[in-house]
Length: 149
Image (cartoon, rainbow, N blue to C red):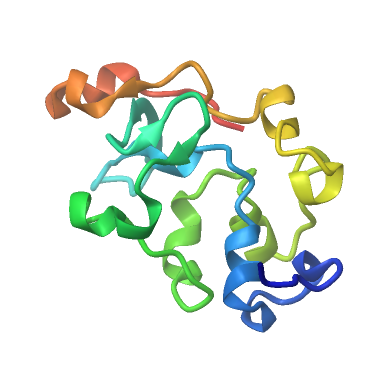
């Protein structure tokens, strides 16, 4: 296992090693929710409809390393692409927070010391998503979420 630097999450994103970058993920699963972007306003809204690869209990991708084989349109988030993607990431996302120069939330496991704290703080999608194969895409707007924070 790769050793991570103490408090690496306080460093600028471009200074993180690949393992440190990956370790920023809080495991909320919010980024794996299908989103609707309205062309006329640019507004992005989240839905309860989850990517077919999301495990609704663990809030993790079941095929993360090979996800593009199953979901070619899945975004590859990196220090080089965050500026293009941050606007549709959840407001609580560690990647977005750090991109915006903000600290991690107290419930983030790097702060709390527990991977369960994201769930305990009701900041994950655990237990309330619908798999995308159960909802036709033209009905996703019936599953929009008012406030994801």
